[in-house]
Image (tube, rainbow, N blue to C red; front, side, top):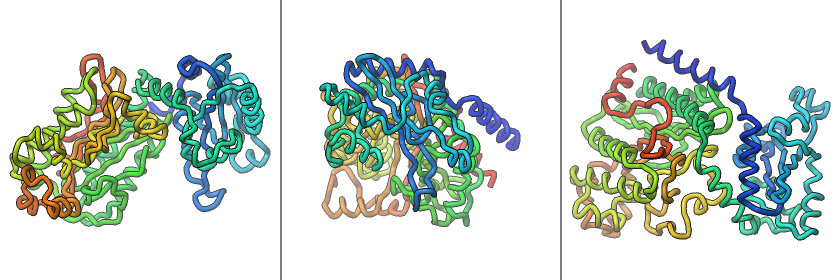
Amino acid sequence: MRVYFKFATFQTIINYHISHFMFSKEIYLQRRKTLMEKVGNGLILLLGNGEVGRNYKANEYRFRQDSNFLYYTGLENPHVAAILDADSHVTHFFGHDFSMDDVIWTGYETSLKALAAKTGIHNTYPFDHIASTLQQAIAQGRKIHFLPPYRHENSLYLHTWLGFPIAYLTEKSSPTLIQAIVNQRAVKSDEELREMEAAVNTSRAIHIALMQRAKAGMKEAELVGIAEGIARATGNGLAYFPIVTVQGQTLHNHYDQNTLVAGQMMLADVGAESYQGYAADITRTFPVNQQFTTQQKEIYQIVLKANEQIIAHIRPGVTYRAMHLMAARIIAEGLKALGLMQGDTDAAVEEGAHALFMPHGLGHLIGLDVHDMEDLGEDYVGYTSDIVRSKQFGTAYLRFAKILQMGHTLTVEPGIYFIPALIDKWQKERKFTSFINYDKISDYRNFTGIRIEDNIVVTSDGCRVLGHPIPKSIEAVEALRGVI
């Protein structure tokens, strides 16, 4: 049964991706048209990414296109750019045609004109013509809209072409363009949802494999290798650096040289990326043993309840901040039942006492980026002039707090963590002693952490979990662990 399951899963994933490398050019034409209408006037400069040397120029990191450039063109070639004229609604494409050296070293490449035609662009120019195009527009008093750069090479280009000091490029970037892109990209189309579900299904195969194969005596890195192999074989690799750790109390723990020991918990935060760049972000936590201990089971069940209850309550019109606070109350209530917290639950959450155990936000938008559009500025993506970021520890880390709309895609990732350094700090400061039972916490100092994360899309009357179900009940996890 297991052999058939694995074959069917991977064959389905492979068949899907073989025929899905780019959307139709009509989709990109409409996306650019919508963007130009939203921005209204001036030139919109969209820079693709270049290749980056790992330790010297010719030894490059694996290339990943800029997500905004990918969204509006679908083209994954390095060292290209586009200028969208919001007044004439004409798009201009800039890049390099292949040379004989390119043919010798990397093979025949599509010509610039043929490349641009794939995405419905018919005006092509050498890359170095961008400078004169922008200078002419500036001389005419036209507005140049550009995005805050995150790559050093693109910062240098913007500095050279526009004359702004590198340190001020983010400040000088266009809020009009940023807000237009955020509003457009935040709501996912059916085509995008299919890509995201493909990424989730690849992630499902990864998490099932990890639950089946993890055992005491293995290195975390062996499990990372399994995850990377499945992701690369059936998609575009991993969407982010994987977190595969027996030290799950460290939220972004990328160290992978620990050896699994009986009695520990394994936290795996691993998400695949589809060939078109759409991400999944999935976390599962399971015991190194075949079964949970009673203590592990009790904490796990609280996190699972928070995960499932939030998914049941998500719908258009509610704020994600309200969902975050609901998760905090569920966790606080569960910890009260175990004697770890005490007092009035609402008051504890209002004052932030729960953040000792869940010091992060409930989730974030996901799409072409695992933290969707974070390069544009998290406050633009997750907040408005009316919904402002909290300054309270824990809630301040909520990446997305806005009112939910149909088509929003988000992560739902509650967790409970026992972080010895944070516990010691708060206990020494006698912080929230009316809500936290520090004496009881001493029994959990070495517990580490549990997080359970799914990806959802907001529907007309609720939400839907993306992809095929990934085991998360205690019974389902233990059934998979029983195969070791």
